[in-house]
Length: 218
Image (tube, rainbow, N blue to C red):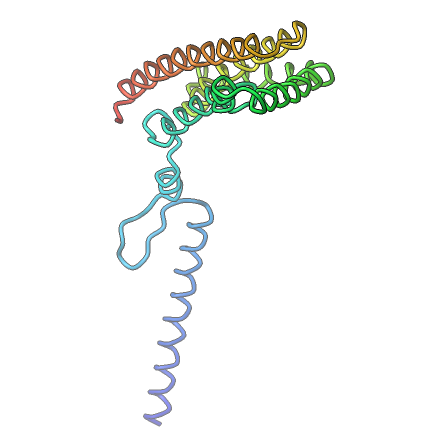
């Protein structure tokens, strides 16, 4: 009789603990799914949304990777002139001959490709680019979304550079530039790209410092 009563009490106690553990586990699971506070074994409560945004920093101007991307973007743009690496221009000037022929050939291919794309899909590219830049400007400067501001400050100068590259390609095609005249036009385009990059980096740096001082997070 005593053993039966003990077993019954033990079974009742075990069932109670099991049910309470299941209820507690269900509550933790629902809290985690809803993105609310998740607590486990005495650790402080963690907001899942805050944890995610701490791991993936959505503030661009205080993020080192944004400034690295900005520097890489403009250094790459100034090195590749109409899709031609700048070392080919320098080598053609120094050695001439086959290096000059290679430069003229690759410029001709890239120029024809750019003009063909502009002729076939230019209006669609223009409309889509204006749509994206307008959306980023509204989100960034009207709704104060910092990542949209950063993308706008990257995208607008690139759009200007695209128009500048198309203009240079059209002049090369119309004037049938070769030799020294072609290298001079390419060097001029590279100079304009570098000036545009300097202005873009300066404006982005000033706006980024202003945003960091306003928000107070450096």
